[in-house]
Image (cartoon, rainbow, N blue to C red):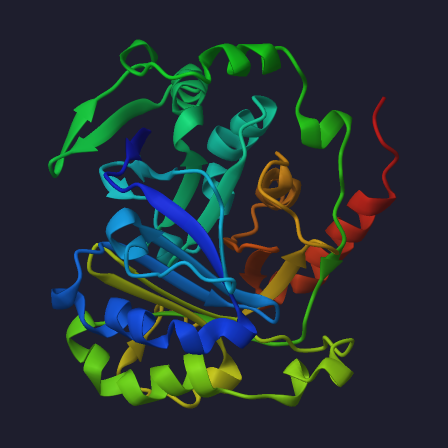
Length: 341
């Protein structure tokens, strides 16, 4: 298989719910006015806690410093697995499961933290720029052909071509067993009752849903977000919009889907519904390794498809609705297993 290092340098940010009013103009510009910005990679995900915004450096310039804006300090690079000349596509109902053992697990073994963003079209694996040499050397051992995007063309790259300060730090981790198998931090999971759809949209029709999209993103209100009912998490607020290299991806629950014109949004031919597994009892942070592997590895063992969306506070896996019972049992068993010494 081939691994592509895409030509984007990304920032991972969080906008507080009570500070959204300060960012509506730049966010609307980034979503709807592509000719007014040079941003090529933009993703906005609303969760009950905050809005996670992942965007390239051109897009990041649009966000003014604010007490309501948190910015993870690293530069992140998106990786994309390509099989048989085509991007590893989630629309084929495999998603992160397909790369769990070939990419996610080896990087966890080398103590490399990853930030996942699955879209309708593909799965992006974000790694810190400073970790790139370790990523390349690790995945070369997994027999990946690795290419770096330069000016729209993909050129071969090898570990010796990449020099950065992390190389010796990465070697300190070599030989260690995976963090998530020898000393697992098995995070609690929440399985809300929402049914979710993973959809796409022709960018040319984006203006047709502008009013609805603005309403859902910026003006939707729900009793579920009332602090007095914060413990009622039977259903949770989750909406994700991505506009990456001209392709749009949307993840929303069926309640939100009903607000949009049915003839404009499209999904896979099976039209399947998905259930969410939210990982983390408290905000996860960015330095712990193996969180994605905790979920994706057992799903791969059972050949269960999954989308995976990391956010500033928590991680979220989407699995086919028909598999949610077996996934729930699997995760409960995982939590009961004794730690390996």
